[in-house]
Image (cartoon, rainbow, N blue to C red):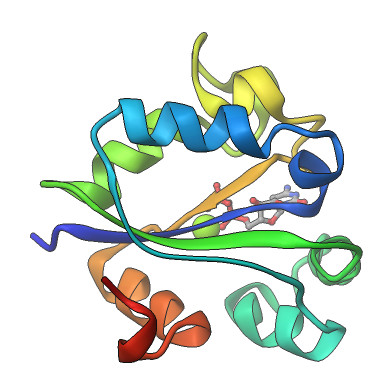
Length: 138
Ligand code: CDP
Ligand code: MG
C-alpha cells in the first residue's frame, strides 16, 4: 500500500470556478499536497495520459475535453491514499456517485466529471511522474 495518489481538477470544474472548493474538500479529508500546478494538456499529452482507454468509444471526446482548458494537477499524500481518494471523488458517473462526493457535488456528467483520481499505486506513480519532477515535490 502506497500513501500517494495523483489527481487533476478537470477543465469543466476549473472553468466552473470549483477549484477552491474542491481543494478545500481534499485538504479537509486529510490529504497533504505534495505537488501542485495550474497547467493544461495538449491533445497529444491528453491522448498519452489516457492511452489505456484508446479504442474505447469515449476516447476521442475525452482527449478533446481534457485538452480544452486549464487543469490543476496534484500529487497527494495520505495513508491508503488511492482507495480513500477514490471514495472522496465518487463514481465515474456523477449520477451514480454517493452524496457528498466531489463528483456528485461538482461534475456535469460521466465525461465532464470534474476530477481524476489514480486507480492503483502503480498508476499513481506513473501519473505523478507525467506532470512533476522530483524538484517539484515537497
Ligand atoms: O476517471 P475514472 O477512473 O473514474 O474512470 P475511467 O473509466 O478510468 O475513465 C476515464 C475518464 O473517461 C472518466 O473519468 C471520464 O471523464 C471518461 N469517461 C467517459 O467519458 N465515458 C465513459 N463511459 C467512461 C469514462
Ligand atoms: Mg480511471
